[in-house]
Length: 222
Image 1: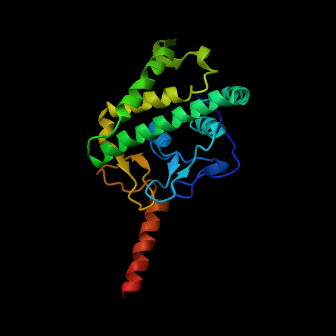
Image 2: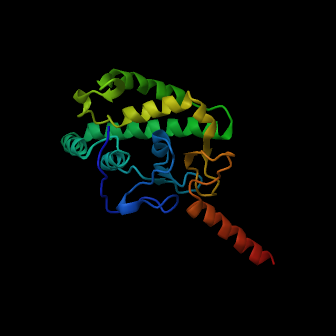
């Protein structure tokens, strides 16, 4: 499912790839599920920054990630305005899913077994994904589509995220999942470099910060 770019008024994060055109979120993970996991910023610090502060943010991220169209986004926002309780529930489930994806992919990046109930959280979401997936014929080919009847489901943007996570976790690409090496950034990304040596979510920001920090330390030590 595709959509046009949203035009939020503020940038959510100062590190990583700078969002163009006033976009609120940076999508530098290389996989939909990794971009979703990165909606909690500055995890290693004492003050992590929540980027999904309300349901409108969740919809805004979904439009920018092109998994919800602007037309569907308007319908979701209108429905959320009529049912704050259901919207709050969808946001809570989204954050729970995000943390499960982060735990699983972070463990993969660190080459350690995942802890807690992260797999169980993802498994609880899978039936909803399968329920709304449909096989459609496109000329001489077939492709997966999301049923139109689910457009008004307030958590519909989670379906492609869950699918992305399940496919990544069961693919050879999982071996390429990395975490940014910056001290204040734990963002996840897919390392597609030939020698698998990428260290930063974005070299021009987190990488440069590290270089500047090392330079200043060397200057003080000289």
